[in-house]
Image 1: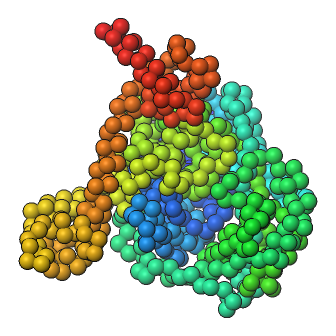
Image 2: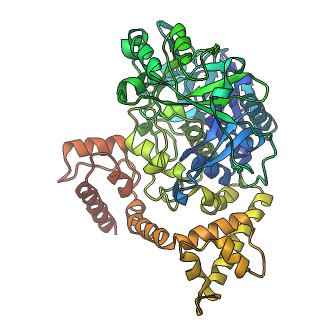
Image 3: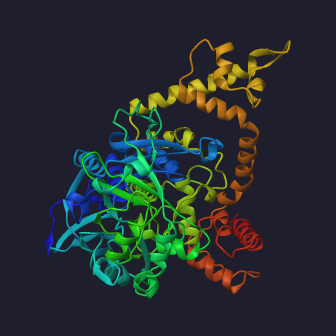
Length: 610
């Protein structure tokens, strides 16, 4: 055993998307931080699709950016196609998505991590967790090196006892070409943490030279490309198209004829897979009435021939994968550069966590990413920045940052995880957010940048730009209230004119311009706030009505053996240990009547103390 001479404030295990955000946040808050990864060449590696963002996920990326995280800036540096989705729909569900040059994305994030003050990046596999008297004290790697720390963040991805399946073949791996993490699962079990098993998968990669692009439908990005980060002025990278094709009856017949060779259907895979991102085998079986399924061919970068076949994730044998790909229009002569596969891995139920993402069993230990049962780069990064912030706050002895469901998609995600747990890989959707009109992608800076600046994660320059935008919005809204325009000889406030569906803000400005020009980001906010004012006020009112329940805090160790509570309710409440009456009411199976019983008991305790 070798005790490393330097003692860290925070050790982050795993340098994927969660780990990078956690380590950067911790270091930027002044903590001496170690980021330990099994492979220095795999920092921020995109294990699956070469893209960032999408519905709900794009919201999370912009929230990370508003808090001072790195993901949005990194994709802006390395993106090769940018699109805003759902632009024909309301602003609540509009979202940005970008294809990345995978290798460039990884290198750029590694460069940021390596250049960060207070942050050491080292290669090593954590095999054992160290804790003393219920508080974390460090980790031990596979070489017997002991790293001491006041807080530890585990972001282990799919590496905990990872097992890859391709047809009848299976072998231990954290992802294709990399070793699994051994020892840490057993160490967690020794400390009393329950472990579950989940499964995810990835599609084959196809050689561009073997694709007949003339038979495919091109899908270009937006022009000009819309940036993710509030600090990015414009995207200058050369943009590449994606391509669309479809499976067909031959594809489906071939898959159904080989289901006996699928580890998913033979019973070999025990882990539960994602319902909302199923394999092509699952799609064909579960949606037997569908004649075809869409396939997106996405370039993996400027300097590679690999195309990601989004839509046909599979763990069928390699020979079947080749055959099924060749049934698809434009891919008749396709050469597979890498087969698709399924991977099983260990996770810790997120009900083991508090809303700060610190574990209930061991003080100072935080979990983020797929160890919590989630899927997706964005979900992982969103948890990572919160875990890194709260690890730093824990070391300082400060109260944690907990984002409300009315403040951020990240808040909705974490509340759902720690309150409801998971029974399949968790993916974020706009439908999970009851206040989604308040949590728009376009206003993430208005909601969160003040917090990021206070934490020391947002630079003075970015914050000044934000203040200018906010001031422009407030000034223009005030002008629209007091200034009048004319319609059919009648004078009406400009605000009322703008509320009319047929009146666009850009056209209004042509006739009634302000003295000081309004920049485009502020103009977008003004138009949304005016046109959706009634709906926004209604949701804000709902937030205020329900906030009193979230403000009624439940002390740790609260006794739920209350008259009127069923045994099942008591067991669920004791297991989750809700932070507030509001959170208690969101536990599946806890009725409004049960929440009211807790509220009455808390009030009775308060009166007796007085």
